[in-house]
Amino acid sequence: MFEKKLALHETMEFHEVINLMTTSLLKSKLSQGVVFDQDLRALLDKNVKLTTPALTAMLKLYSNSEIE
Image 1 (cartoon, rainbow, N blue to C red):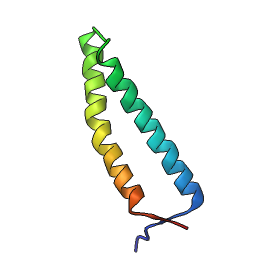
Image 2: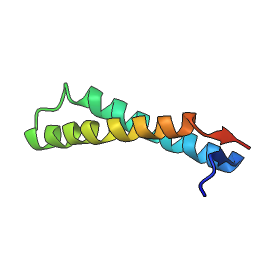
Image 3: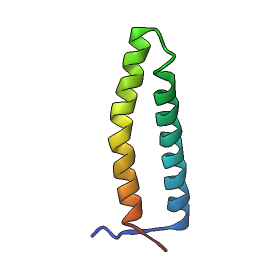
Image 4: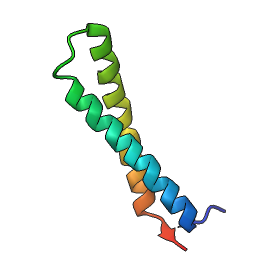
């Protein structure tokens, strides 16, 4: 059965992934206003649409877990 406890190194890795995803999301959102190429803008839009729910799910998973 799955236990909701994270080891210290797993907690650190979780933080690293969440920080990377947050930075990527922020950069994509900020770049949308200054990008004129439609293909690049479409990629940025797709990144925002896919990253937002994934980041929300990771934060929910992290907040429901315990640290050993």
